[in-house]
Length: 140
Image 1: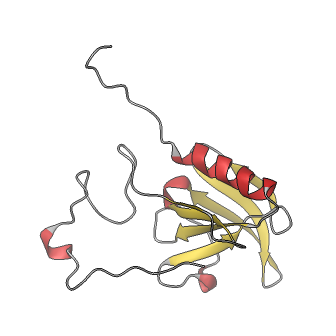
Image 2: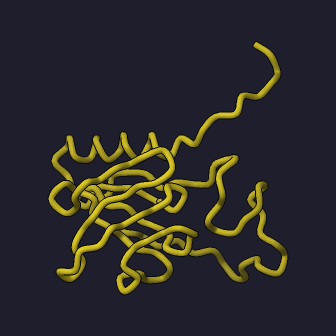
Image 3: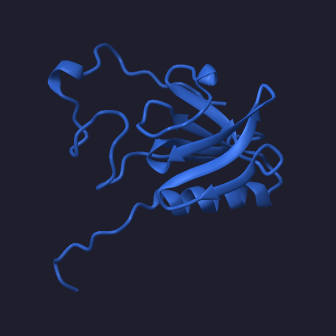
């Protein structure tokens, strides 16, 4: 095999589709966590908290779910108001089963825009580095 690297497409759309199918196959409810600050995200802003929104993408909750190679879209009702939701796949932070939390949290991929503002090496500009101890938050 040669030393040339082969540029590959993002694995995120394939993983989101596969995990969605796996969660549904196990009679669970698929939820996605979306970074609402990514350019192109169209979600109900009144439900965004801390820059993120959690959405139920089960067949009973949405209509016309399409998980393409660049975006996820569907129509749903929020507070009785119909809305077309559009989410670039780089904005999908995680997909998990509501019932048991099984699923996957996504990191950044080479070649795809990184929603958290880091550069290609994963470093933030010096003036944007967080201070203090790192914290983790459990998403349920």
